[in-house]
Length: 143
Image 1: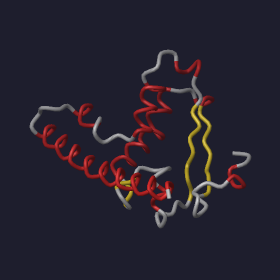
Image 2: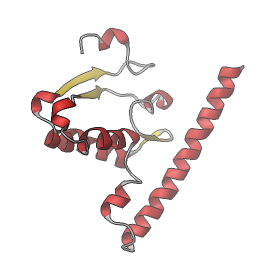
Image 3: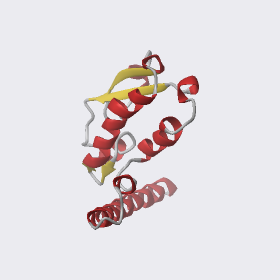
Image 4: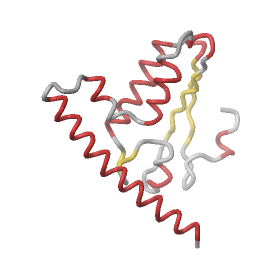
């Protein structure tokens, strides 16, 4: 019924978005090579939604050390067999990990956020991946 139709439309959107992303990134690379985009402008086409949210919410916010806590979760043993679930937790391009977006997220987590926030404002924790849902309440308690 309705649920299957919604899922079909969502899958169609993810496929379309993935194709558009490849085209935008190729164009950004070409414009960067021609000197028509600088590195920051090029980066805009490669960053994930999560990275963009963090840049605006943490990295460029005034006095962020006074009002910001960062909870940095590391997913352990993530499985790509159910990539439709995995894409809710990591950047994917179809059934494949978006390596460039993942590299940028790693840099955000490991370098940029620690440069802008006090260590006491950063809480790091690991979360085991549980198929098929990704995160299960029983393994998430206490984290």
